[in-house]
Length: 199
Image (tube, rainbow, N blue to C red; front, side, top):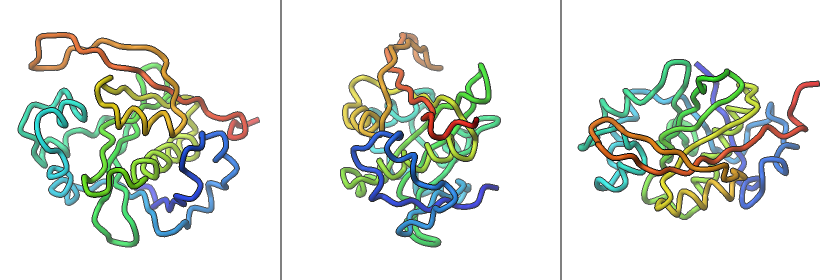
């Protein structure tokens, strides 16, 4: 189990990862934000964050409604890890996301099921959560690329990812289980900054 990461939201907003790379990853005691490994006990809280089928489609298009705690527990992929974002020790989760390996190599990772508690949206918590997941990917797992996919109509999420430094790389078409049609998604990526690369 990974130790908790503490995050400083002052280094996050509207900066690219390259500008934040000067922060020493060993010094994560920042203002009480903590990225903790997801546990089964968190699922009951997270299930209440998704309001309606549209939000579920954006978050987890392969998950058939209704969303349940057991379905959330089943999201974690082999070789990947799910996390919750907390403020302070033992606090309620404010965000959830996963860091997963891509099929083509362990230095390429993707973020999945990134979601923030509804009453915390629009307050910068999504940016803190992304910073935490990127720190896990680049600093702890030595990734060279981090990718994610997002529905084009999920405008708030798309803006949050772009503010974090993700760049639009193209589009993908996916067919999700239980759904007959193909769905268009946007693929966003971030490359490991040169200042973090090993010599």
